[in-house]
Amino acid sequence: MDDAFKPSRRAFLKGSAAVAAGSVAGAAVAETPDPLITELQDWASYTGAGVDETPYGMPISYESHVVRRNVEWLTASPISSINFTPIHALEGTITPQGCAFERHHSGAIELRKEDYRLMINGLVDRPLVFTYDDIERFPRENHVYFCECAANTGMEWAGAQLNGVQFTHGMIHNMEYTGVPLRTLLQEAGADISPDKWVYVEGADASSNGRSIPMEKALNDVLVAFKANGEALRMEHGYPVRLVVPGWEGNMWVKWLRRIEVVDRAVESREETSKYTDVYADGTAQKWTWVMDAKSVITSPSPQMPIKHGPGPLVISGLAWSGHGQITRVDVSKDGGITWETARLGKQGDTKALTRFYLDTNWDGAPMLLQARAMDETGYVQPTKDQLREKRGENSVYHNNCIQTWYVSAEGIAENVEVS
Ligand code: MTE
Ligand code: CO
Image (cartoon, rainbow, N blue to C red; front, side, top):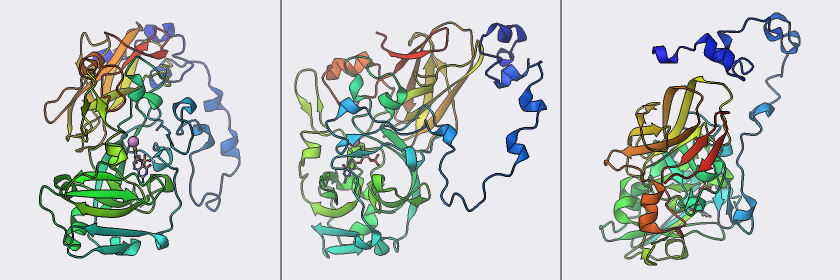
């Protein structure tokens, strides 16, 4: 351990919450008898729950605050809406399905495996219809990927808006998918896979959420997925089968996948024209932004995760990701971007997946302007909000991957702010 991280007794006695919080560092100075240590507790006096009580385990009631949340004023109805992953309260990189954000255009549908059909038609030698069981007979692969809605952080263009990383950055999840490469199904149907062709994919829900995907991507790493994190997809994530389009905007990850049509040009559906399109400051629009550029955010401390101890050892923790590949480096600033320290990556980042980073630091108790800045394998560096606004103006909605700032007070309270 570096000397800087050794808690000094004096520093801890000064920190108001340090002893009460019972942190590791606090424990070093605990002297008074603690009834939790010296007295027999209820949970050691009686027997606990039997193995027949929770056939499928839910989080313990003390963790009931770690849930998806929506922002009522954002959309007219919860049927065509979004809720947010509680990324402030999660660790590591895998998002449990039960708290992974949902985005539906016409609500989540209940579709039995027995009623599931997937059609491949269009420019194919053999139009085919697969049942769910058919799909499970093709060789499968497992990969961890993030899925980020293009609207993530979209409310922050004009200024700091929502006071919680769950709401500013929670339209993202990261799961291990099991599925069949789309390439395999295209081959099975004898599809025309020449590079100028496209696939048009649609879902079985009322919105159908149709999107066109260029053939090169369709043949590369797109998965027709039927499991997430080892178990069946949850209804809200597209049970029984969804498309996984690694690194590309969440809208293309069609849920309840029902049809794949091979076509010779992009369909230009609603979801790829009037929606999910970026408008520039000068009023012109960018046709298609598929790849989600490198982005990072500090999840703790953050507005929903205040610092609960005084000066001394502090773990700054966050997430970074890039639709172009691996995250190679994340820097953290405590002074609003004037000076930077390189963070430690939890482990070498997977391609197109969340990477956890840490800055194990010694907090002097002074206010901080915390920022994180991600770099990916292409050499791309996450931009500041002002750099993005120069190109995109303030009326953009989608694809906001700017550097986020949290102001942390001497009391450890964090707040969503902007620095320029
Ligand atoms: N697929 C269908 N069929 N219907 C939808 O409404 N929403 C899209 C995409 N696929 C949608 C869909 C959008 S905008 C996003 S961001 C992702 O699904 C969200 O996936 P999730 O609900 O599993 O988080
Ligand atoms: Co979306």
